[in-house]
Length: 460
Image (tube, rainbow, N blue to C red; front, side, top):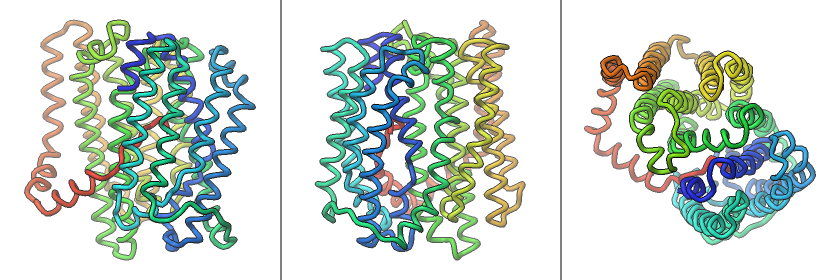
C-alpha cells in the first residue's frame, strides 16, 4: 500500500529515488546484522537476563554505527547509485537505524515459548504508522523524501511499542562468556548479511547504474507486490520451523521429518506463487500503480520466478541455523553472486530488465542446489533427497515463462497449452494439501501460531 500510494503520487523517477534510500538502509542493515536477536532463540541461555542485556547492548551499538556510516558515506553512495540528489536525504535517513537501536528485544526472547503476539503488535503498529506518515508526506512534499518520513515514523512507533509489550525492562550489560558465544554465532551471519545484500539487492543496483532511476522505479513496482508476500511467507516459515527443528535435534527421525516437511512446503508455495503471480500480475499492476508502470508478461513472470527461487532457500538455511551451521548461509550467498555476473552479461546480450532478471535466476538456482546439498550432507541425509522437487519446480517455471512469452506474442493456443501444463505440475502437491486439511488439530495449531506471527517488511 505504501509503494502503491507513492507510485500514484510521485511517478517512476521519484519512486526510483525513494528506492535508493530504502536500498541504502537495507545495505547497512545487512552489513551489521550479527543475528543477535536470533541468538536469544537459538542459544541455550538465550532466555537469561545476561543474554538479554548483552543483545540490547549490541543492538544499541549497531544503531549508532549504522547512523554514523550512513552520514559519512551518503555522498559516495548517492554518486554510486547515479542519484546525487539523494545525498542530503540519506543523511537525514540516519535517524531511522539510530532509533531502532533502542528496541526492546524481549518480544524475540518470547518466541522461545512460541509466543509471537508481542512482535506482531510491534510490527502491526509500526507498519500502520509508516503507511500513514508516508502517504501524508507524499501528498504534501510530492518528492522522494516522503519515504524518509514514513520510515522514521515506523521506527519510532516500533521502538515505543516494543517497550510497551515487553515483560522485562530495557537494560544493557556485558558478559564475556556469552559475548564470545554470540560472536561465534553472529560473525558468519555478518559476513552472510553482506553477501545476502549483494545477492538479493544487486538487481536494483545494476538497474539503477545501467538503466537509470526511472527504470528502477518501474522495476520496483513489479517487484514489490511479490517481494512483500514472499518475505512474509519466508518469515512465517522460518519462525514456525526454527523452534521445531531446534527441539528435534536430538531425535534423528523427527528432525528429518520436520526438515522434509519444511522443504516440501517451500517448493509447494514457491510453485503456487510463481504461477499465480504470472497469471494475475500483468492485469493487476496497471490498475494498482497506473499505466505508467505497465510491463510485459515476460518481465512479470521472470520477477515471479526469481522471488520463488528465493523462497525455496528458506528450507536449507533454516535447517542449517537450527544445527548451528551458520557457515552454510554465507557459502550459499557467495554462489549467489554468480547471478550478478550473469545479470551484467544479460543486460548486454538480451537487454533491459529481462537480461538482469534472467541472470539473477541462474545465480539463485546454482546457490539453492548447492545449499541443499551441503545441508543434506551435514545432516546425514541422502544427497538426492530433494532432487525430484527441484526438477519439477524448474519444469513449472519453464512452462510459466513460455506462457508469458506466448501471451506477449499473441499465440493464444500456445499460451493456453503452457497454462494447462503449469497447472498440472501442481498436482503432486495436492496430497500434501489434502493431508493438512484432514489433520484438524495440526491445522488449528498452525493457524493459531500464524495468526500471531508478525509480518516483517523487507525494507528492514
